Image (cartoon, rainbow, N blue to C red; front, top):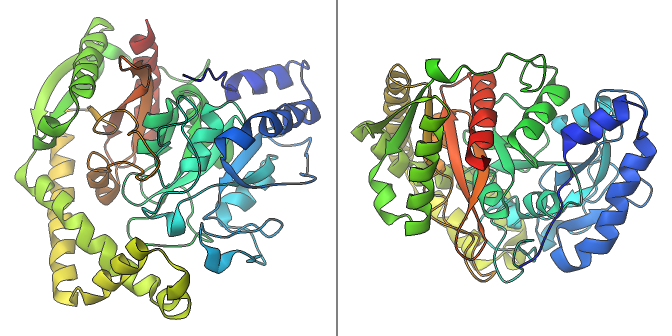
Length: 421
């Protein structure tokens, strides 16, 4: 079992602002950690030879890993595919440009699965190298968990932020749909593709989101803290829970007990049928859109694609427009039910994954507990804090109403502290 000392974004920025660490030193720490650790973890597809270190801006000195699904003008962008091995975009993705303008250093491109889909890449789980780090944001989650960088970007179409964060024992934040810009990513399913963020803990990822966007999303001193007694927390008792590992079910129950002990108003809430039907519709929506947006890739580069990616694009092209429209209608009904559900609770708690990271690198895991919330567009965050008997992380997913990202992060930060007490 590997031991990893993670870099806290909040601690680094505090040290910088106190004059105890300059941006050059902060970036040097990451460069040294990458050189020492990445040969074993394999989280980076490319590391910048001479990264630009900025001394101005709220993220000055913060080394950020960029998932290799985002365009970068100064570093290769392969989208996890041999078909794009020599690809060099002319411009940055919007989120990369925003990170640069805020002062961060683009330290490198983190490994992604092929087109951010299911075909596993070479990255290993920092907690145990025999286990998957999850996908498709495998490199981003592993690099943060291994203590190489304090922050990274990711994307989620099914469960590709929350699940790898859970497997790697860090905070992964999937914002409300389109809170972060998607321009300049390699799309797979445009109505689902969501940009997310990774950091060591919830307060760190909230700070990252706040400093990156300029939005009031922080959870530190001076920010309005959650008042537990006024927060209704609901354990989301969907049918999928029966298929979760016993360790994960036990972790969810412990999370509820600790939330109650911390003063939160905790209860249980069942899943409306329309939301279950919406989750089942996710695959048709995803695959139909993949058939459209990746059709040219299939035609031009099919001989360089994995069989699972080719088959998915072909399956999507076989879905009729009527079937796609029917799936979209189910999603719309599910969103209406989701809005009604959040009239009864403020925060939902569910597993972030069916269990801990699976053994082997042949699979990136199962997104069954994530894809509904991607489809609903609601904000979600993985709260680390639990482990199974083998020491592998088990994450708890917190979900809030669309647009309530600040409240979600504030409550999740308080819950993370309660889980660790």
